[in-house]
Length: 209
Image (tube, rainbow, N blue to C red; front, top):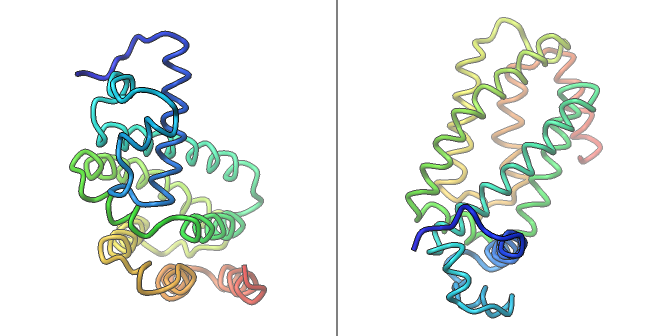
């Protein structure tokens, strides 16, 4: 059964409730541990109704991740516009990530990569993220926090490789997310920061962001 595109206001409302409930359970318990029956029961709807909107678990997961990504992109756009400089943005994003990992089951991250459509989703998103990150780097150069003599294309690819390595090797299960950031992300960040950028970053780290 195909996921319906033209549905009633009630079904649209129900779709949002399903996404909210499913994402909450996926994050708390891991994707594998959550059954479609569980979601239907939590919402007090029939399994048939659930499958009329999302014909399988993978499609539901993909919709959850897509909505989550939209929310995060909107939050980042607001943060990018309101923040005084790139270092403030980095610290804010770091705090968000730490909180996300603290409240998310490790199995959620490892389970995601068992679904082909999800892998494709992240692959396509990485291309869009690459362009945004290049823009972020350029802003940092203009503000005097990042060195202007670095190849931004290489820097962007290195950070993508670091993120991929962290997730694929599940470092978050072996180390705290704070350790991962401080030993991989922040060390790499210092490498292409100016003295002004290093001092700003060290200030944040010293006050335990």
